[in-house]
Image (tube, rainbow, N blue to C red; front, top):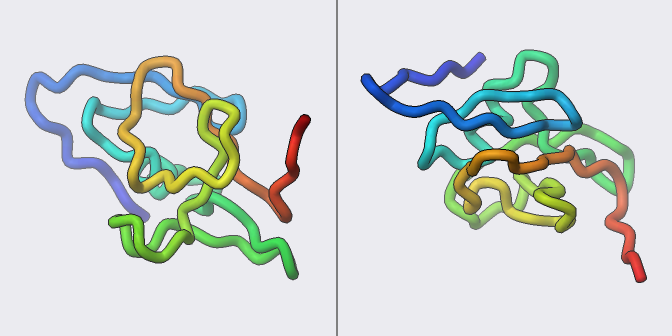
Amino acid sequence: MFRKLHESGAASVTLTIDGQPAQAEPGESVAAVLLRQDDMPASRSTPVNGSPRAPYCMMGVCFECLAIIDGVASTQSCMVPVREGMRVERQHGKRSVRA
């Protein structure tokens, strides 16, 4: 659905989404990379009925882009720039609190 218009000479960054490698360019948000994923652009599912939700506003207002980024749940993926080695997981259901 979405595709990146590459800037000439831009470096590539590798991150993982649900354990699978994904390519991005420095300065992109995690939400933008999630939207480009062919298998599922959703970043989370709702805690009530499990329906998929995807990034919407891309400016930190709507909270539809919540994901687990480097082990931190409920992170607004539209506000986080990608970096090499970043681990992203789609967030399903209720957030759990770990001790």
